[in-house]
Length: 238
Image (tube, rainbow, N blue to C red; front, side, top):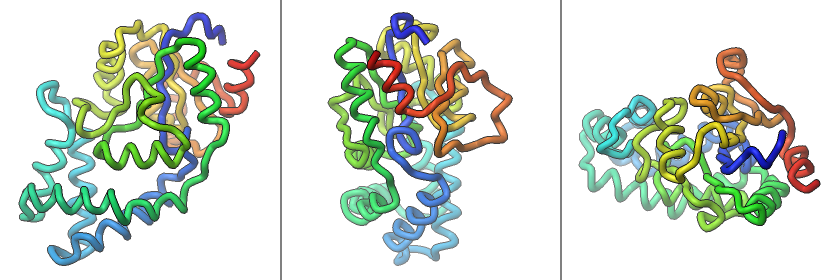
């Protein structure tokens, strides 16, 4: 890979810059958040509404509204809980109990080193995590990875994004926001569907070799480069 041909790098967060498996995360996350809503409905009904609302965000394709709107619309309709109560309970959860999830995460030590090298190279760096979490939850996960929002030119979350991965419009919008040609962007991630789908608009892709997910999509999208974050670091640090 010739880094001179790259103007911007998009990084996934969970499973890439932050060591975390989808299964572990969902098991712990749903167990914790369901307790916050147990006064309203059963755990089973809550998880059904939570997953349905999340799916509504994935399907969101509205340039005039952010994906969080689709979640609220679905969740409040399904549960009968007011929007205000829903928002307040989620915010309190992300400020308090959500922190327990850090125990299930592995800090990827080389991640911040890669970001620092790219900053010295004056590359545009985007934290392109799938925007199904609000800003507060994204900030906390970013901190667990040893990073901050200030390390990136843009960070996607549910309160500032009109699309989710793998919708091509997600990647198109990111390129437009930071004024970069997709062909001069590198997407680094661990998910064959959500991250490698960036190739559908001409973005080059780097699939890391751990925490890989959605393996059934291995053949659907092109993967330009494969290797660990350490290998990426060594390549940049030549």
